[in-house]
Length: 479
Image (cartoon, rainbow, N blue to C red; front, side, top):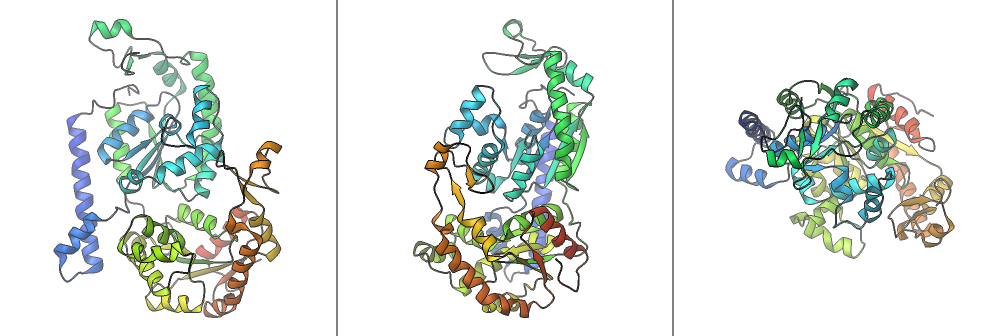
């Protein structure tokens, strides 16, 4: 395979293949929606459905060693799937991102960008409209297990992960043949992709950092990291040989990313996580969604998105947000119903958190047919919650988050400028805790088969306990 083939030179048959699959997938999705909702008037229903955001947009991670051709394949997939390409370079060189300023300086100095900052840049970019509506392809990130875990912690869950693989000797030889056109930035290769024009040939230059020794060092570092990254994506990862023609690699990658995963849970899960503020519900929901391919449904996030997208319900919610008042249960349930009625929730199952907060909301949830079949209470002592939340701080300059006990700032200068979110103030946390415990007894009685988990321990230990309740629900509370 030629890793340096220019991305715009895509064979016509590949373009046709991608377009036909996209049309077929769209028709299949619309037929599923008609069968599920059975509208009285299908034509307006289908028109409305086409105007909605696509919940099945691509969310792809492509990894591979240097010279494996991952960027070429990523760019080709972006063209076929009409998705946004996210690379380290375009993340740090984003002129519209204030957060990218520090990363840009480090990148231009050829220094390592801290994982915290890099993941924040990814989160910021994925929140933009093009990534939400058309999907995204992440090229070469995560590079380390730390990055992978940070990405998962934020609830960023790819649907497909591709790892390109080739012998080191092939990759070193491929890298040595790279040449770059200083005028256009176009990359060529002495063996696979030599330009026919003598004018271009004469001005080609050898890129930096492609010597045999430098490539070997990069490959060694890659192999050390990739074996720790791969376990983060069980069941959604496919290894594809990059030591074959580029067209073959692309066909295999495109076929894989257009396949639908079935959940590997033993039933269609409808999981409900309950617990006080700061108990770790969001993190556990993200981990469950990642492993079992569930839809992560955060009620608070749904309301924020409805307001930001200026939907019909969002405009009704906006006045309550502006006045910092609780959204009425009837309106909240309409927003929630709209999400849980979508095809991905019905097919894959969901993990819900942020609601119900009291018995009335729980009864409303059940009356609408959204009965959870697994319920977990995350039990965390009052003192631990206070410690977790009231000691959180944020650096207004870099946007980095700290914790005065678990992750203190590295210098006194940074510590002096840290700010506390008003929601983390002691009085606010106490108020939310009191409200939760006031209603928790009623919820425990309603969900009699719920499993109580000690949430005051390592998050991944908590996840193991929850997972055991997903796979094989226990009739008793677990420690």
